[in-house]
Length: 196
Image (cartoon, rainbow, N blue to C red; front, side):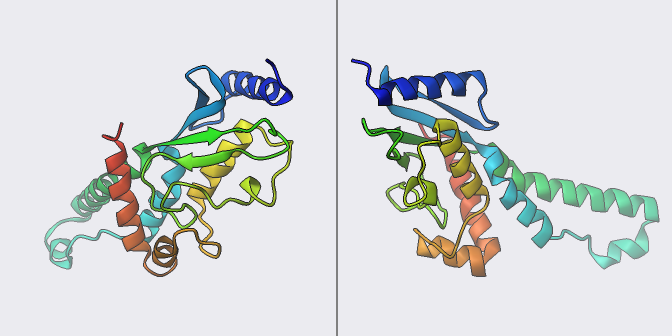
């Protein structure tokens, strides 16, 4: 039986296949158009990378400056920066995060229930994986399709809102101890590489 919700989800799926947003993938699960699996890929954590680049400088010791010439100094500085940036950023760039979208027959008049399957540490994601995002709650509109939902989640991951926390520990760390927050996010990203 083809209901309005199912027809709309088929349109959303075709649109997502034809013109997928960067860093996002999604499809119905096991031929059930009402249940989708989706993946958001690591470019969402580019904000963490930018924070790392801005917060943590890597300078060679002053003693090296007096011993080596200017050209060698440039090589040492560049090497130190590249080594540390690559080491710290590789995980932030390559994470893969899985989520599910459960639709009701009221879609698109009501939003889906969206939940991360992957372990997350983020100010706006609850421990059970559900997401505190206005368009999935009080700001929902039938004009949003699956691509818009996933893109909004991707944006939220890149730009957390610590003033509306679902995870108070992550919000506090994000606001007060960014280095510690970034370390924890990196750990979880690295775990995502081996998670099923």
